[in-house]
Image (cartoon, rainbow, N blue to C red; front, top):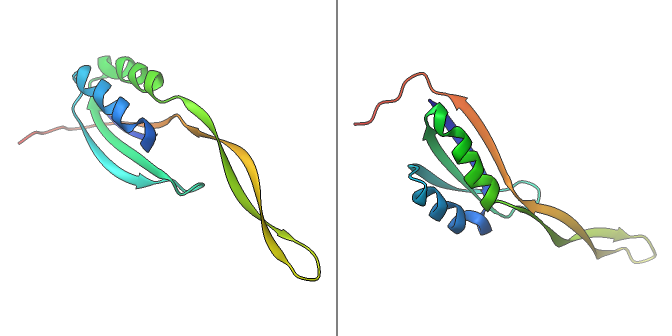
Length: 109
């Protein structure tokens, strides 16, 4: 048995949760915040049998696609009156990060 810790972008949460339910997975959802853009993420904890792991990965890969987003990064303008100017750049967001851990024991009460 495995414990999968899946970190996904909050925009993908609804679609992923619907597909996980449709596929018969049981899971727990935890709200979280990303470090780089400080945007909302969702962390999903899923216990799966080894034989179900490929099916879980397929659901995540299908429903958590990366995309580009434009963000404003402040930059310092040098001059007699220093000012902060916004400088838009494109960054890749979305997708999924999945940590797969071995489970030595599982008990449900």
